[in-house]
Each structure stands twice: as structure tokens, then as C-alpha cells.
Length: 290
Ligand code: ADP
Image (cartoon, helix red, strand yellow):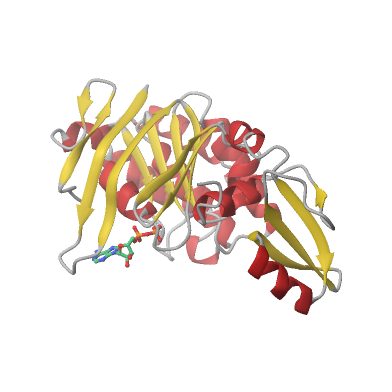
């Protein structure tokens, strides 16, 4: 499977130019769509999920024209929106059966097998009879994935799924996505760099509606080799450094300020360090290497 997005643009009626000529190629595996709030991630995800139209451009899922064959696309797509509401008074088991019925799994034996397999896969089997209203954030998100998987979608889109999850739940959720993505395209939209760091084999960084980088995270990191330098300092010196250098990030670290700067040359007083994905993110967003 391949998702090919070409020159996609969208301006909302209020004049916000949310997508500017977005072009991306996405293959099977976990794809991280990274960008700050307001970058256009949800606009792009909703367009791919056939929930809103673009002004121009095209999206193809292999040979299928996504924007012109919405019904066909919906049959092969699982979507977990940012705000995923559940019916609080029904159990995971009941709601999964209900969704499976709606999606046409009418044979009760097949439905039982499918629902049980999904509950096991998403680690919810033990709590299957519990009411969804009592689920934690992570359990709700995993339930969202279970319902999105009904109908064997070829492409799964999850929009900012880890916001508000504790570290254990976040890991469990990301591992689940990674596992699923062995066979299908999974697009994970997020503003959290760590979500993308370990598991995504492909990624893009978008900002203000534009693709700033697309490729493999490791390639992006390699591109910064020798160009990130660090110093631990105090507030006043950090302020001074900001006037003289291209700042990637400043962070409080054990009572000091850790400054990362971008430079192609060695910088007196700074030590070169191995770049991380966060350095890539800030360098790209702030166009430091331009
Ligand atoms: P992200 O998901 O990266 O936070 P969004 O796609 O939600 O970004 O938003 C991109 C820009 O488009 C923002 O400036 C946002 O305010 C604007 N926007 C999003 N949805 C709408 C809408 N339905 N009508 C008008 N403006 C919108």
C-alpha cells in the first residue's frame, strides 16, 4: 500500500491557509506526522480520512482516488480522531459488537472471534465487561484502536493520541501502533517528538501548513552530525548566546540552563554533541539550517 498526497492545499472560510501545497508519500509502517499546535496536522488527517475537502491537490491510496471515492476509502480506513468520545454506559465488549455489526460482520460466531481477538490485541480482554465511562485515558485510546481495526483497514489514522497519557500507557499505546503497522499504513499525528523518535520508520515535520522535512528520522539526525553544540550556563549568559548564535533550544537541566546551538563550525566554549530528533525538530521548525 502507498498513500500519495500531491500538492494539497486548503484555506478555511475564515482565511486561514491551513495546508500549503502538501506533498507526501507514505508506505506501510508507522508514519509520524510531527508539528506544533496549529501546524495543519488535523486538517491534513481529516482530509485523508475523507471528512473534509481540499481546495486543490490529490490523494491516492494505490490506484484509488481518495478525494473522489470517499465511500470506497471509508471501507478501508480506520480513524481515531483527537476527541474520541465513547458511550459511558456500555462495556467495551458491547460496543465492539455493535460497531462490528454496523460494519457488516453479521455472522455471530465470526463477530465473537473478531471482537475477542481485538480485545486481546489491545490488552482490554480482562476489562471487556467494564463500562467505558470507567476506562482510563490509555484504555479509551486502545479501545479506539480496537474499533478502528474492525473491517481490516489498510490505513489507520490516529490524531494526537498520546496527549494526556501517562508514560506507561503511552508506551503501551505506541507499541500497539507499531505492531499494527507491520501490515498497514499507520499515520500518527503528534506534537510530541518522543512519540516519533523510536518507532516511526518514516516521518514528516510540518509547520504553518507546509512540509518542512520528510524522510527517515535517522537520516534527519545524521544530517545534523557535527552541527549541534551545547553549553550548560546561567540565564544571563544564555540571553547573550541567543544574540550571537542560532539557538536550537534552551532547557532547564539540574539547576542550569542547557543551550543547544546550530553551527557548522566548532564554537569556542561549546561542546559538539550527537544530535537528537528534538534538535532536528527545532532546527527544521526554526529554519536554522537554511
Ligand atoms: P494542528 O492539528 O496541527 O494543531 P489544525 O489542522 O487543527 O492544526 O489547524 C491548522 C490551522 O487551521 C490553525 O490555524 C487552526 O486554527 C485552523 N483551523 C483548523 N480547523 C479550522 C476550521 N474548521 N475553520 C477555520 N480554521 C480552522
